[in-house]
Length: 266
Image 1 (cartoon, rainbow, N blue to C red):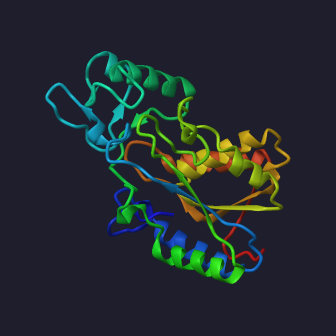
Image 2 (cartoon, rainbow, N blue to C red; image 1 turned 135 degrees about the vertical axis):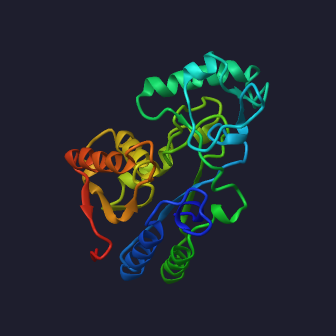
């Protein structure tokens, strides 16, 4: 629910309709303020140099890729794109690493490596929670004498981190990229789990799917309720992301996930 995705004026990766989603989610929280026992807010927390940002890469002419460029394993093998760093944290040969990384991504069958505009950079306006939701969260904290659980993800620069609970290619030496068992255990103990945010085609989709896998038992999936009027997909001329969101919702419904609206009262 961050400004990079939700602010139509400044959002580097604005998701059309996200600001309205945030208004509806805020109303949902305020209308159910004493019935919601815990709120978990997942936050993209990226560095400027990140494997999915333009500055990380260059071509033979020294130019960075444009946003939304897809970098394939073959592109690296054929010398179309190179990492700008010879070495990376804990990695002695960056080119061999990205060659192996993109191969693992493509074998996973999820997403190829997509270069996004730098977004949710730590310490910037884009990293902050959209104002109306931020206000609702603060009011929930005040009324319930409880703190929101802010879950940071995406700070590891050598792997993409769509899901809030696991990186696309986890690093065995970096716990922040591995499965967030603490959050999953907390959710398993919940009676109902209401889900909303951006984007339904990416972070929400992957987070829900990874949480469901982390449950290890689809009886827990029945506790999940997706607020469909609080979720929107990325819009791109290259990929039908709304269809990806729809397919995700239908697939999870078959596993037991419920759907609802933000106007519903718990």
